[in-house]
Length: 223
Ligand code: CA
Image (cartoon, rainbow, N blue to C red; front, top):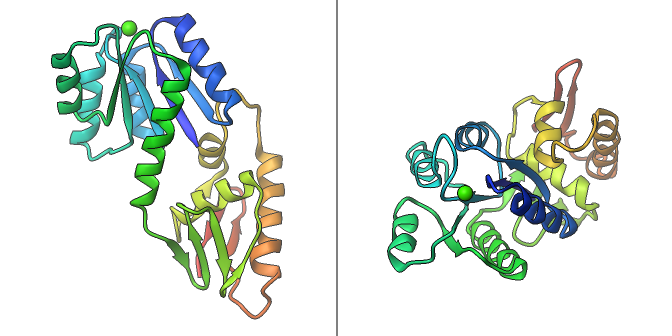
């Protein structure tokens, strides 16, 4: 799960990031509105935590623009003021939830989990050939047989399945499955792909091979 934190108060941004990383999330932090808008438009996040007052472009405008562009990534809006009017404004702009400062970290985590549950239960099952992935249950099956994957293997498989029949580059994989603080993960990605191939293709010799390596470009999942 990857989260974008947009907050211009550096200390608060750092505190949120540290807490979320401890909870196992991949976290990117940005301090200005314009950069955040651009980043949210090109990268895929599971949740965006968006401060309302930001330099360059405020949180409300970012939220409205993303929704206009049919970007429905769950957004939690943060504000220094907790008036009912502001809450309504934030929700009208397309935010999914709203949290007034100061808030407890436990409350933030509870809201994030609740948003993730809401957005994942709506998801349909991902399928290619006889491979089935149920994102709500983290369940992976080939031809009806359960396949056990590690958290990172699962994250990579889910990402590939969300882009079927397309070449996905290593850069796309590393930016979705890991946060930017990590160094080059190309070797790790290769290792993960190898393990996925072994569990999903090699373990089922009578089924179609689903993984393709496109030399110099990346990977593709297709039937
Ligand atoms: Ca602010």
